Image (cartoon, rainbow, N blue to C red; front, side, top):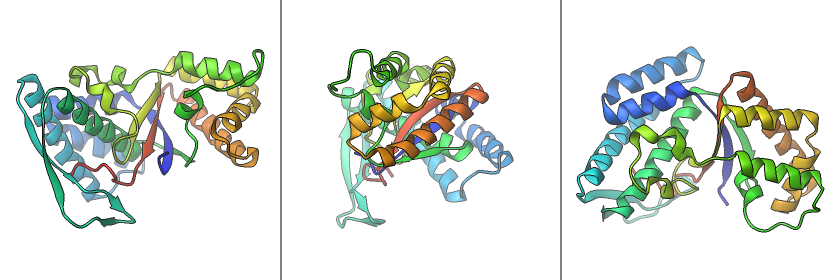
Length: 258
């Protein structure tokens, strides 16, 4: 399980400018994003934006190589733990075909999450809990229970983030999305209509989601209840701004690409 899981509102303009950064002009697109983030009182450090600009360039070259059927050489740093990189430096690798599509998806999901995190409010759910986890595996739930109905609703409404990134998609890139990249590995996406429906259900009662969380994660109810409150707040904020919501998890650069 990832160290930290976040819910990230999805602003269409951020997604559009990321696509523009990959397809057209990364300098102008990222400058527009940075200006917008600054107006919202956020914005990140210069190093954050330099890193994002570098990744936009890598994404452009990866995509071009995939579409041309060419290999792409890239160095993957060894995992970092407690801010210390394991000795030995970066590991050079060459990617081609499906493997290149997967690593492209990993970095694309990471970059989208980082941009959203710099531009909009985020809600941290902690470790050991994610909406994706609530939908995974087989759970024994009473047929008419609220937890079962909540799980069915989440399953019906959740989408892959691939739907957001159609302009820059390549075949098979979505296999790289879930929980494999830093700092945000994109998992579930709920479009604005889904956000409103889930928020309305939570506004009626959070108990079904609490019960589902306890059953799926094994965490004590006393830990699940405040997490559920954060989930409710995130869906409420996104619903009030007519935005979608993305779940991403953070792996502290364990799978970094720079």
